[in-house]
Length: 459
Image 1 (cartoon, helix red, strand yellow):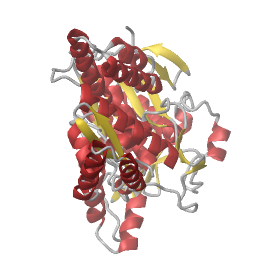
Image 2: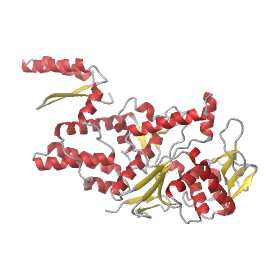
Image 3: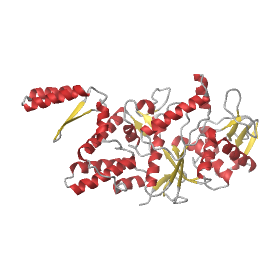
Image 4: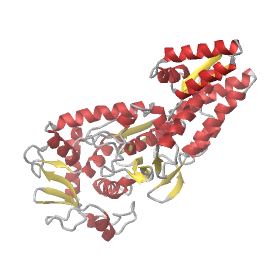
């Protein structure tokens, strides 16, 4: 099977062909660490974590670089507002981001570079752009000369007038034209800065990613990923810088972008008060629930986050884990996920279809009768879960975690009392206890191994 990807650069779905089949290279823009990551920030982390897993089913080595932006004006503002050192802000929120992403099943990238660790690389790339006539120095700033790169706008499909009107362009007097963007700017006072040929200062946002990608993956890479909000100006500027600095036609051969996350059909906004952080959501839901929701829509499309969607994801995972608890055999996962899963994911990461296939596999496991079929289905379900980053807990742990949040002893006592009433054929009392358990949001399941119980989610 061929892996197909939708390339933002060409606006077409293409067969993926890496530059070097022995090592696929992928760069994904990471967070600017000045606050908690919201659920929209988590979507690219989950999507490109899954892309990496899928590529690894075909290629022996997939090298993923996901950066940390730890020098930025938003960070400076947050530190000034809180009256603490900038390094305290970046260290704290980097650690929280890494922990929160791990909680939703995002595997660590091969390299997680920080912008502040690559200042020499950034300065070198800016020098190359100046030497080749693609950048100029003006009033202690270094700016990229957009007019020097005829292909500028190829990714976003905008002409230069649209770029000025549609972006937050700083119309500064030292610019040759308004759309020129900053590569280096002066620092003063308490702002972070480094010595450079153009004075004490700090890099612009766009040049950081170009320099880090080149340092760890080379001048031309296979895949560059990120949210759709980065297409312009960030990724457009990365292309211009990287192609001009290295005199290449391409920076990345495939550009992959995920859609926005909105909340109850509204854009997340501080002014609206509907910004949902991963850190806070994890206090109320297991990480796999958040991951399941983020995989529930095709990654190109907007994803609408709502209580109903989260509740349904939780109920679905409860059902799948119940099947694993009652029917999964102690086997080793298949060497590769079943064809139904791979076919869906190889088709430009069709996660809704892949989740449907996972649910179907579990249904088949629940109804399988002969040992050979149950063994194969058990191995396939485990392999599918491993690829998707779901069903990664032992089923007993999944339910016991929920039970630990309630008075389990009291519920066990009620269930024992109900069982005793049923044995005595006192069905009115048994039904009354069941209603009492239902009022406590406890779901009971009578089976051959006795009565199991779990907490109803989303109640």
